Length: 505
Ligand code: ATP
Image 1: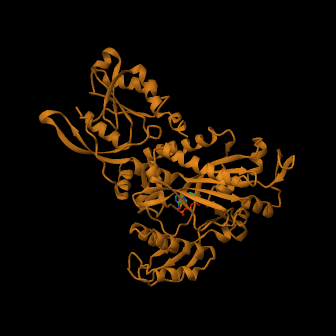
Image 2: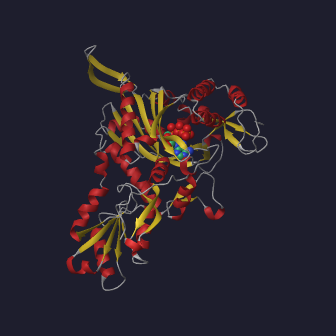
Image 3: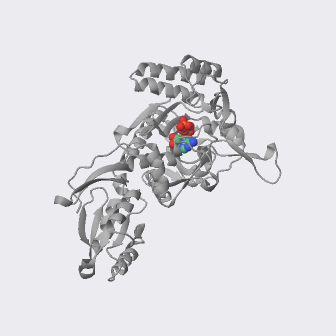
């Protein structure tokens, strides 16, 4: 018997542990690994795809099901190339790049300076860190690349590999991937792999508004792949060249964007907390340098093992995108608002709506969820002389996102117990993703399920044949509860229900 009273102690986990756990237990694999992989591209394995789908579903339903005025779309990855001219990506979607001539390594110049600021902050000098970030923001806004290089030299920032300051000039590098469409290659057939999903929403603004008979304020949500030729690929699935975004563009009456920005900022933070990311590990970070489209922008950051980093961006984009598309397409992007303006006594009339956007990376959310769930505990098992202390690794995933909701174990592989286990599986498989496992000792089977985050294990024993009861073992407490088979559906259903998360929003 396990000693469930024992309070577990948790060890800090490092990214390396998480990467190897993710690979060993079928969550994330390096892409095309038999060919030594492809930098910054990853594949999701059998449990990873389930976890990721659950996270996406929770986002999708929180957006479209909990808000009467948010609807979804699924736009294509390829778009008319003028889209990217209008959006500013052809001319402005770039990162400042710098090379070290000794190590031949390439870096993002802004990230080198940000890392230096983080160093000051960790050493307790927040004022110096803030001043450095403000200066960086100013130089980037003015596109003063020589100034950024000088800042790197003044701050004595060295290449982490060669430990020298033998830097090239800083230059801008466009992050969009391009390809050719059709059989004939040439400038006219060049198209891009979308670097964000947002533009698929903007160009469909009127289609959606009219077909869904939407009234401002309303939102359009989308989940889809985006592609960026990131200069430096590191930190596992944190920075990928092919990734997935979950974006929502909320169209509002000009002048009301400030309130909506505040509201979505809070709503999105609450959502992350409800999903199991603790408040102490989340923070807002206001942007020093605003993107070309933004009027105000904030990141929601999570404390990864490698520090606080962005998982979601909330941006007040004004009417930048719709106005740009109006200009480039020569198609009006107006909305007629027939609500009466109390100041004039007349309808608000025609305008191009303003946009507040929430944009979260499915992969970064996945990584945050995995980092949060991955724990190593010291536990005491057995009683009296047989008592022993050992460590166990487990994924404390919220039951609503766990890949497998319950594993059903016949205690032995005979006496009709496997058949009974399969009978239970068949009676519940329409409701939940389940597995039946017969191999190995029951302890080994529990361990395997702990490692993939299965919240419940259902043991089928000889008593089950007599009275149709089973033992349900809980992943986190290791406590065991005897209950009728007939109660399983409601019991598991309650724990894994999305409603438990939604009611916290
Ligand atoms: P960063 O500053 O880290 O490059 P960003 O500010 O460019 O990110 P946004 O353009 O605001 O990111 O994109 C919205 C969200 O998309 C981010 O919060 C992040 O979760 C996700 N995202 C962006 N780039 C990547 C990437 N290369 N890999 C994985 N997720 C990404």
